[in-house]
Length: 463
Image 1 (cartoon, rainbow, N blue to C red):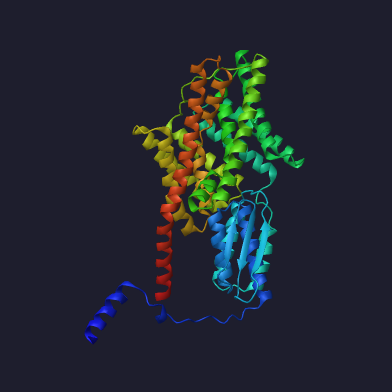
Image 2: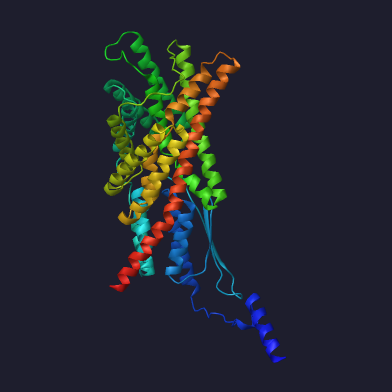
């Protein structure tokens, strides 16, 4: 009987867990409430700053947990939404939980500050004391944007020059695109000074670019020298890339994939609204030009790219200017240019192989983001910074413009309307493919990055 009971006990033990075998222990907490509040406040301030400079919701939540745990406060519950961060810490069943909330202002990308904040989080994990971490954070928070406003305006103008090179435009058209972009950027800055919502700034910027394109086409029709081969569609397409380059499509898609539905929904709605502002500005500019007899016709065929060397030159210019626009340092700028070439090479090979434009764009973004997260880790630069700059050359500015122009100049027939809507759907599919490819590359590269990091740490311990 004893043997049977023993075998039965072993079989049951192999199947079920024994609750009595687990010791009921409880940690005796000696953390002072004032100290806990200081730690949570620092973690929240770092999280707020990370959100404000363009970090994803998942990175913000992880940074908050890492800072709190490194300073002895764990576990904490972190809730990140589009415009607020909440952190809660429950010390003991008999104590009231400590819950703090901070409201986050509208994000403005600043990848140089993002890099410094990520380095601060790593230093805190390395043993930086609380008061030193607080003073270091306040010093980072007070840092101004790396570049002056006039230099940023020039960088925005050079971005459109890169787009013109991409399509093989003449130097004159590239110069006109540069002037149009600078005028649009200055108009948007003027509206921001009077605290106009950015939605209306997008309308004004797109309207300015479209108007200058229409005037250029009108002067070409009058026989003005050097404008014989005027291509207004490239000017407007470059302006569209300019308006859309500042939107973090990658961050929105990454939040959705990481499970931060509320934050992703807010970012996607913001992206949609600002894109709608660009659409309204272009449609308004085309309507005014058409009313004044300065309208222009664009072929329904996709705009042809220039020679391959010019394509890569344009990609490098676009990646560099986007990185500067987002406040990146020299190291991030160089990596962005390299990844931009890698992304465009992946896109070109895929498109040459017969794949659709959307699929080829997604493959290029996936390759760039996968390599980018590994390079960014080794060189200590933000992965989202280099990924964003790398995919901007593939933003479908030309397709958006052709679809809008086909709708505006349609004769009301079903065929013409369907043609315009189909072109816009293609542009939308390219945008979705870019976001999905970038997020998938980051997702696939993260485990490999963590493995490489753990190997480096283990080698350091062995030595």
